Amino acid sequence: VYGRPVRQLLPEPADDVDPLEAYGADERPAAGRRPWLMVNMVSSLDGATAVEGRAAGLGGPADRAVFRILRGLADVILVAAGTVRAERYKPHRPTDEMRALRTARGQSPTAPIAVVTGTLALEVDTPFFTEAEARPIVFCPAIADPGRRRALEAVADVVPAGEDRVDLGLVLADLGRRGAQIVLSEGGPSLVGQLVEGGLIDELCLTLSPMMVNGLSPRVAYGAPPADGPARFDLGRALEDDDGYLFFRYVRRPD
Ligand SMILES: NC(=O)c1ccc[n+]([C@@H]2O[C@H](COP(=O)([O-])OP(=O)(O)OC[C@H]3O[C@@H](n4cnc5c(N)ncnc54)[C@H](OP(=O)(O)O)[C@@H]3O)[C@@H](O)[C@H]2O)c1
Image (cartoon, protein in one colour):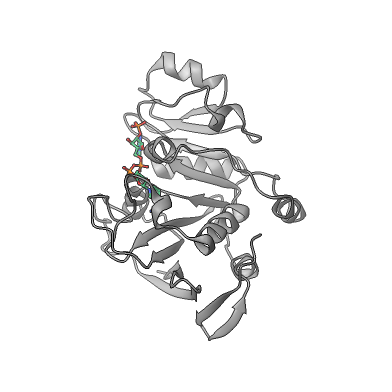
């Protein structure tokens, strides 16, 4: 299911690379109590992140395989509420093979999904909450609506993290206290922008989809520039599938 062979272009050329093995062998050391933060996004050639409001139109079979592989590595999946709504998010549902791999690594069989929201406008009776094996976590500002908060507390851990908007540094610290060592963020672009601004990204897994789509979707990240200037990353690996998709793994360059 996971092991669609792809070609490796970098660091050295190789045929028939199993992405499950490649991503699984990468080192992701947590720095103290702060978990390793990886981001997974797909972009078109012209920089779009969605077709008709959803990322699925940019994907392909190998892209979906890498998406599932990266989820399989995560202790917690972190996503912003706009993406939960736009993509009609479902709970993490790994295969039996992935569950076994996770259990062997000492992880829970499924990763909880943590959502960042200011409005708490999330529907409690959707499969995202009702079918979750691992209880979702909802991060909100302290000023969030108390009524909505009570409703969500029935189906999720609701955690205030920041006064009038969610502070992603506090989110990662909370997830670290819960024992998470690897956090995977799946966006959307506004959330990735805040992670860039905060200098919080350790690894970017970027799929380049061989399409030009136009439209007005944002690019992979937007927001305020990081205080210390552009964050530099090193290209750790590039994979290519038969359909022309490229899978880049960038790791933050040490300071
Ligand atoms: N290409 C890809 O890989 C990819 C990945 C993910 C998503 N997408 C696409 O991206 C689009 C959605 O992205 P987006 O940038 O518009 O939205 P987004 O980042 O997914 O979500 C924005 C929402 O998240 C909440 N939020 C984010 N940061 C917050 C903070 N610091 N404090 C409080 N709340 C915060 C707010 O939710 P509330 O409104 O609830 O307050 C805000 O409206 C969709 O079209 C989706 O398909 C593409």
